[in-house]
Length: 299
Image (cartoon, rainbow, N blue to C red; front, side, top):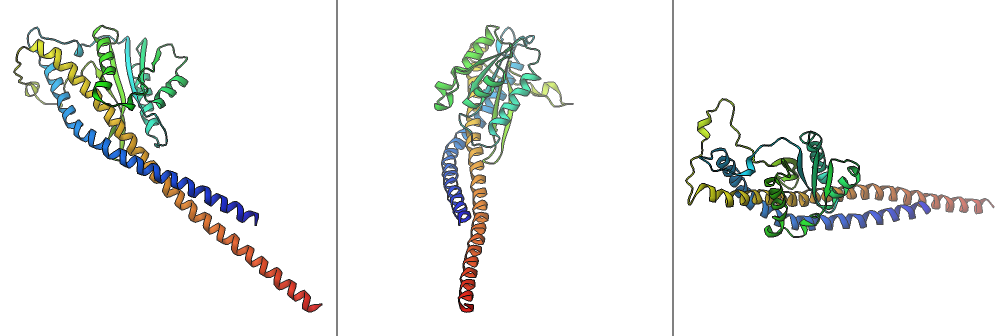
Protein backbone atom coordinates (compact mmCIF):
# COMPACT_ATOMS: atom_id res chain seq x y z
CA UNK A 1 0.00 0.00 0.00
CA UNK A 2 2.98 2.29 0.50
CA UNK A 3 3.58 2.03 -3.25
CA UNK A 4 -0.02 3.09 -3.96
CA UNK A 5 0.37 6.11 -1.71
CA UNK A 6 3.55 7.15 -3.51
CA UNK A 7 1.88 6.88 -6.93
CA UNK A 8 -1.15 8.88 -5.71
CA UNK A 9 1.17 11.65 -4.52
CA UNK A 10 2.95 11.71 -7.87
CA UNK A 11 -0.39 11.89 -9.72
CA UNK A 12 -1.48 14.81 -7.53
CA UNK A 13 1.85 16.57 -8.12
CA UNK A 14 1.66 16.16 -11.91
CA UNK A 15 -1.96 17.39 -11.94
CA UNK A 16 -0.93 20.54 -10.05
CA UNK A 17 1.93 21.11 -12.50
CA UNK A 18 -0.42 20.59 -15.44
CA UNK A 19 -2.81 23.22 -14.07
CA UNK A 20 0.08 25.71 -13.80
CA UNK A 21 1.41 25.07 -17.33
CA UNK A 22 -2.12 25.25 -18.77
CA UNK A 23 -2.76 28.58 -17.04
CA UNK A 24 0.60 29.95 -18.24
CA UNK A 25 -0.26 28.86 -21.78
CA UNK A 26 -3.55 30.77 -21.69
CA UNK A 27 -1.88 33.88 -20.24
CA UNK A 28 0.83 33.80 -22.92
CA UNK A 29 -1.80 33.28 -25.63
CA UNK A 30 -3.67 36.40 -24.47
CA UNK A 31 -0.46 38.45 -24.36
CA UNK A 32 0.64 37.04 -27.72
CA UNK A 33 -2.47 38.32 -29.48
CA UNK A 34 -1.71 41.89 -28.43
CA UNK A 35 2.01 41.58 -29.15
CA UNK A 36 1.37 39.97 -32.54
CA UNK A 37 -0.99 42.75 -33.57
CA UNK A 38 1.63 45.34 -32.58
CA UNK A 39 4.46 43.80 -34.63
CA UNK A 40 2.18 42.91 -37.57
CA UNK A 41 1.11 46.54 -37.83
CA UNK A 42 4.62 47.87 -37.26
CA UNK A 43 6.76 45.63 -39.48
CA UNK A 44 5.65 46.75 -42.99
CA UNK A 45 6.01 50.39 -41.98
CA UNK A 46 9.44 49.89 -40.41
CA UNK A 47 10.72 47.76 -43.30
CA UNK A 48 9.60 50.32 -45.88
CA UNK A 49 11.22 53.15 -43.92
CA UNK A 50 14.43 51.12 -43.62
CA UNK A 51 14.51 50.47 -47.38
CA UNK A 52 13.89 54.15 -48.04
CA UNK A 53 16.69 55.11 -45.63
CA UNK A 54 19.21 52.88 -47.39
CA UNK A 55 18.19 54.22 -50.79
CA UNK A 56 18.47 57.83 -49.63
CA UNK A 57 21.91 57.32 -48.12
CA UNK A 58 23.10 55.45 -51.21
CA UNK A 59 22.01 58.26 -53.53
CA UNK A 60 23.01 61.48 -51.77
CA UNK A 61 23.77 64.34 -54.10
CA UNK A 62 26.12 67.27 -53.70
CA UNK A 63 27.49 68.10 -50.27
CA UNK A 64 24.59 66.53 -48.36
CA UNK A 65 25.74 63.79 -46.00
CA UNK A 66 25.04 62.07 -42.71
CA UNK A 67 27.34 60.42 -40.24
CA UNK A 68 25.13 57.33 -39.89
CA UNK A 69 26.44 55.62 -43.05
CA UNK A 70 30.13 56.37 -42.56
CA UNK A 71 32.35 53.31 -42.48
CA UNK A 72 35.28 53.48 -40.07
CA UNK A 73 38.02 51.01 -39.04
CA UNK A 74 36.61 48.79 -36.30
CA UNK A 75 37.92 49.65 -32.84
CA UNK A 76 34.96 50.26 -30.54
CA UNK A 77 31.53 48.74 -31.00
CA UNK A 78 28.12 48.36 -29.38
CA UNK A 79 26.11 45.13 -29.19
CA UNK A 80 22.48 45.24 -28.03
CA UNK A 81 21.18 41.89 -26.77
CA UNK A 82 17.37 41.73 -26.52
CA UNK A 83 16.10 38.83 -24.39
CA UNK A 84 13.20 38.29 -21.98
CA UNK A 85 13.05 38.84 -18.23
CA UNK A 86 11.70 35.36 -17.52
CA UNK A 87 12.41 31.81 -18.65
CA UNK A 88 10.04 28.90 -19.35
CA UNK A 89 10.11 29.82 -23.04
CA UNK A 90 12.00 26.87 -24.49
CA UNK A 91 15.22 27.76 -26.32
CA UNK A 92 14.09 31.33 -27.02
CA UNK A 93 16.65 33.17 -24.85
CA UNK A 94 19.40 30.65 -25.55
CA UNK A 95 19.13 31.14 -29.32
CA UNK A 96 19.28 34.95 -29.08
CA UNK A 97 22.30 34.76 -26.77
CA UNK A 98 24.04 32.30 -29.13
CA UNK A 99 23.51 34.69 -32.03
CA UNK A 100 24.93 37.58 -29.97
CA UNK A 101 27.98 35.59 -28.84
CA UNK A 102 28.66 34.48 -32.42
CA UNK A 103 28.62 38.12 -33.57
CA UNK A 104 30.85 39.12 -30.69
CA UNK A 105 33.43 36.44 -31.51
CA UNK A 106 33.31 36.74 -35.32
CA UNK A 107 32.13 40.12 -36.62
CA UNK A 108 33.53 42.02 -33.62
CA UNK A 109 36.67 39.94 -33.14
CA UNK A 110 38.87 42.88 -34.15
CA UNK A 111 37.25 45.38 -31.76
CA UNK A 112 39.29 46.57 -28.79
CA UNK A 113 36.20 47.55 -26.77
CA UNK A 114 32.62 46.24 -26.97
CA UNK A 115 29.77 47.76 -24.97
CA UNK A 116 27.04 45.14 -24.51
CA UNK A 117 23.62 46.70 -23.86
CA UNK A 118 21.48 44.07 -22.14
CA UNK A 119 17.72 44.45 -22.55
CA UNK A 120 16.09 41.70 -20.48
CA UNK A 121 17.37 39.88 -17.40
CA UNK A 122 18.33 36.63 -19.13
CA UNK A 123 20.86 38.24 -21.45
CA UNK A 124 22.16 40.45 -18.67
CA UNK A 125 22.70 37.47 -16.34
CA UNK A 126 24.46 35.47 -19.05
CA UNK A 127 26.99 38.17 -19.99
CA UNK A 128 27.60 39.04 -16.33
CA UNK A 129 28.46 35.40 -15.57
CA UNK A 130 30.42 34.49 -18.69
CA UNK A 131 32.16 37.71 -19.79
CA UNK A 132 33.07 39.28 -16.45
CA UNK A 133 36.76 38.52 -17.03
CA UNK A 134 36.81 39.61 -20.68
CA UNK A 135 38.57 42.98 -20.72
CA UNK A 136 37.09 43.88 -24.11
CA UNK A 137 33.47 43.49 -22.98
CA UNK A 138 31.76 46.17 -20.93
CA UNK A 139 28.25 45.18 -19.80
CA UNK A 140 25.72 48.04 -19.61
CA UNK A 141 22.68 47.09 -17.50
CA UNK A 142 20.85 50.44 -17.56
CA UNK A 143 18.04 49.12 -19.78
CA UNK A 144 17.40 45.62 -18.39
CA UNK A 145 13.79 46.48 -17.48
CA UNK A 146 12.93 48.18 -20.78
CA UNK A 147 10.24 45.59 -21.58
CA UNK A 148 8.15 46.87 -18.67
CA UNK A 149 7.19 49.86 -20.83
CA UNK A 150 7.37 49.43 -24.62
CA UNK A 151 6.07 52.90 -25.42
CA UNK A 152 8.09 54.50 -28.22
CA UNK A 153 9.04 57.48 -26.05
CA UNK A 154 10.58 55.07 -23.54
CA UNK A 155 12.36 52.70 -25.92
CA UNK A 156 14.00 55.41 -28.05
CA UNK A 157 16.47 56.26 -25.29
CA UNK A 158 18.63 53.24 -26.24
CA UNK A 159 19.01 53.98 -29.98
CA UNK A 160 19.49 57.69 -29.22
CA UNK A 161 22.38 56.89 -26.88
CA UNK A 162 24.02 54.59 -29.44
CA UNK A 163 23.45 57.01 -32.33
CA UNK A 164 24.92 59.93 -30.39
CA UNK A 165 27.96 57.83 -29.49
CA UNK A 166 28.35 56.75 -33.13
CA UNK A 167 28.20 60.37 -34.31
CA UNK A 168 30.80 61.34 -31.72
CA UNK A 169 33.11 58.57 -32.91
CA UNK A 170 32.80 56.53 -29.70
CA UNK A 171 31.43 53.57 -31.68
CA UNK A 172 32.53 52.42 -35.10
CA UNK A 173 29.83 49.78 -35.45
CA UNK A 174 26.62 48.71 -33.70
CA UNK A 175 24.67 45.44 -33.83
CA UNK A 176 21.33 44.28 -32.41
CA UNK A 177 20.64 40.64 -31.47
CA UNK A 178 16.93 39.90 -31.24
CA UNK A 179 14.24 37.31 -32.13
CA UNK A 180 12.30 37.91 -35.33
CA UNK A 181 8.70 36.80 -34.95
CA UNK A 182 7.09 34.67 -37.65
CA UNK A 183 4.29 32.89 -35.79
CA UNK A 184 3.59 31.36 -32.40
CA UNK A 185 5.65 28.27 -33.18
CA UNK A 186 8.50 29.82 -35.20
CA UNK A 187 10.91 32.56 -34.15
CA UNK A 188 14.30 33.33 -35.68
CA UNK A 189 17.22 34.53 -33.57
CA UNK A 190 19.07 37.12 -35.66
CA UNK A 191 21.76 39.77 -35.34
CA UNK A 192 21.53 42.80 -37.62
CA UNK A 193 23.92 45.67 -38.16
CA UNK A 194 22.31 48.82 -36.80
CA UNK A 195 25.10 51.28 -37.57
CA UNK A 196 26.54 52.27 -39.95
CA UNK A 197 23.49 51.91 -42.20
CA UNK A 198 24.14 49.28 -44.87
CA UNK A 199 23.59 50.26 -48.52
CA UNK A 200 20.76 48.51 -50.43
CA UNK A 201 21.67 45.07 -51.72
CA UNK A 202 22.11 44.85 -55.48
CA UNK A 203 21.52 41.48 -57.08
CA UNK A 204 24.42 39.98 -59.00
CA UNK A 205 24.28 40.95 -62.66
CA UNK A 206 21.77 43.76 -62.11
CA UNK A 207 22.44 47.24 -63.40
CA UNK A 208 23.50 49.67 -60.68
CA UNK A 209 21.56 52.55 -62.20
CA UNK A 210 18.39 50.51 -61.99
CA UNK A 211 18.37 51.00 -58.21
CA UNK A 212 18.92 54.74 -58.37
CA UNK A 213 16.23 56.30 -56.17
CA UNK A 214 14.60 59.47 -57.42
CA UNK A 215 13.70 61.54 -54.34
CA UNK A 216 12.58 65.16 -54.36
CA UNK A 217 13.61 66.87 -51.11
CA UNK A 218 11.70 69.80 -49.69
CA UNK A 219 12.85 72.08 -48.09
CA UNK A 220 16.44 70.83 -48.43
CA UNK A 221 18.27 67.52 -48.50
CA UNK A 222 20.51 68.41 -45.57
CA UNK A 223 17.67 69.59 -43.33
CA UNK A 224 15.49 66.57 -44.00
CA UNK A 225 18.35 64.14 -43.43
CA UNK A 226 19.02 65.60 -39.99
CA UNK A 227 15.44 64.77 -38.97
CA UNK A 228 14.55 61.79 -41.15
CA UNK A 229 17.55 59.50 -40.60
CA UNK A 230 17.44 59.46 -36.76
CA UNK A 231 13.65 58.97 -36.81
CA UNK A 232 13.88 55.97 -39.14
CA UNK A 233 16.67 54.40 -37.08
CA UNK A 234 14.62 54.78 -33.90
CA UNK A 235 11.63 53.16 -35.62
CA UNK A 236 13.78 50.25 -36.77
CA UNK A 237 15.06 49.73 -33.24
CA UNK A 238 11.51 49.80 -31.88
CA UNK A 239 10.65 47.03 -34.35
CA UNK A 240 13.44 44.87 -32.89
CA UNK A 241 11.82 45.16 -29.45
CA UNK A 242 8.29 44.43 -30.68
CA UNK A 243 9.57 41.43 -32.65
CA UNK A 244 11.28 40.00 -29.57
CA UNK A 245 8.28 40.74 -27.35
CA UNK A 246 5.94 38.77 -29.62
CA UNK A 247 8.53 36.00 -30.04
CA UNK A 248 8.83 35.60 -26.28
CA UNK A 249 5.12 35.04 -25.76
CA UNK A 250 4.89 32.77 -28.79
CA UNK A 251 7.80 30.65 -27.56
CA UNK A 252 6.37 30.50 -24.01
CA UNK A 253 2.90 29.55 -25.23
CA UNK A 254 4.37 26.76 -27.36
CA UNK A 255 6.59 25.53 -24.51
CA UNK A 256 3.72 25.52 -22.01
CA UNK A 257 1.45 23.74 -24.49
CA UNK A 258 4.08 21.02 -24.92
CA UNK A 259 4.56 20.81 -21.15
CA UNK A 260 0.81 20.40 -20.66
CA UNK A 261 0.74 17.59 -23.24
CA UNK A 262 3.71 15.88 -21.57
CA UNK A 263 1.97 16.13 -18.20
CA UNK A 264 -1.14 14.50 -19.71
CA UNK A 265 0.95 11.61 -21.05
CA UNK A 266 2.70 11.21 -17.71
CA UNK A 267 -0.65 11.19 -15.91
CA UNK A 268 -1.91 8.45 -18.20
CA UNK A 269 1.17 6.30 -17.47
CA UNK A 270 0.91 6.96 -13.72
CA UNK A 271 -2.77 6.04 -13.65
CA UNK A 272 -2.01 2.79 -15.47
CA UNK A 273 0.72 2.04 -12.90
CA UNK A 274 -1.66 2.97 -10.08
CA UNK A 275 -4.42 0.68 -11.39
CA UNK A 276 -1.98 -2.20 -11.82
CA UNK A 277 -0.66 -1.76 -8.28
CA UNK A 278 -4.20 -1.49 -6.94
CA UNK A 279 -5.30 -4.64 -8.76
CA UNK A 280 -2.22 -6.43 -7.46
CA UNK A 281 -2.99 -5.36 -3.91
CA UNK A 282 -6.63 -6.48 -4.23
CA UNK A 283 -5.55 -9.82 -5.69
CA UNK A 284 -3.12 -10.37 -2.80
CA UNK A 285 -5.83 -9.56 -0.27
CA UNK A 286 -8.23 -12.02 -1.94
CA UNK A 287 -5.55 -14.70 -1.95
CA UNK A 288 -4.91 -14.10 1.73
CA UNK A 289 -8.64 -14.37 2.53
CA UNK A 290 -9.02 -17.54 0.43
CA UNK A 291 -5.90 -19.01 1.99
CA UNK A 292 -7.15 -18.20 5.49
CA UNK A 293 -10.57 -19.70 4.79
CA UNK A 294 -8.96 -22.87 3.42
CA UNK A 295 -6.78 -23.16 6.51
CA UNK A 296 -9.83 -22.90 8.80
CA UNK A 297 -11.66 -25.60 6.81
CA UNK A 298 -8.67 -27.93 7.07
CA UNK A 299 -8.51 -27.27 10.80
